[in-house]
Length: 106
Image (cartoon, rainbow, N blue to C red; front, side):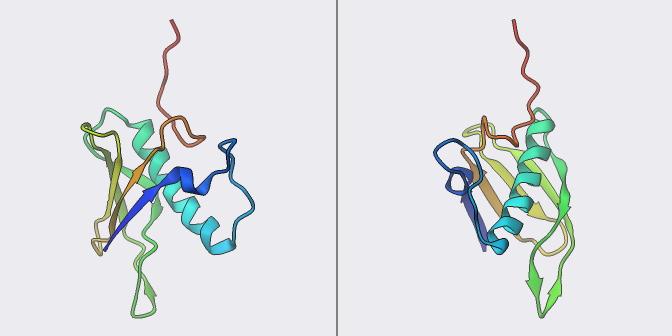
């Protein structure tokens, strides 16, 4: 099953992370690592996140590598675990604190 995420749903009106439950914080840490990896290598066809899979099956954590990329047509970030196949997309990440694109000022 795919995890479809609008990252803005984790932020308050000022673009900051409010006080959220621990489980939600753990998910946000994972998603922010995916955003940072994809945006840091924005022009690369694919890269890897500095986070391991969060999927749990039969009481065991997967810990597989997470492959990430940016879809050119709508600028969403796609991700997939190479071990278990868990996957998702993240939208509305542009301009967040995890956006690591290298902007050039003219």
